[in-house]
Amino acid sequence: MTAATVILRGLRRELTRELFEELGALQCTTEEILGYIGTTERKLESWCRKIYRRSLGETLAMVRQDGLIAIRRASFEQLKKSATLISQQYNRFLPNAGTDPQKSAEEAIRALTAAAAPQREEIRELFADPEEGGEES
Image (tube, rainbow, N blue to C red; front, top):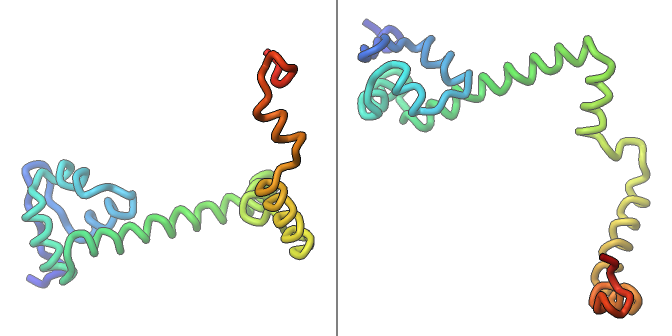
């Protein structure tokens, strides 16, 4: 029996390498896998070391990346089919596309400077007593 075919027999199910990788790709936590199989963390840790020659934490972190990549692939497939989604994702990931970076940097500096050195009128408005005509109720 090779390491790839070692099965962890739990109270509820048998854990194979394929099932473990499927659960990891689904972003299952260690606790969820333990409950799903019906085993202890010590046994699962030992099984991972036999199969992957890595700790449970290292192995699960690697396997979970497969699921994240699958999610991205599915997202890109959906993007190909929907102009609305393309627009939303464009605005989400590229909000400043097509704008002049120099102009954006200057605006950011002006905003920071204004926040660091407020004008007297702004200070009066912030700290005025409501009775003196500051903030309205």
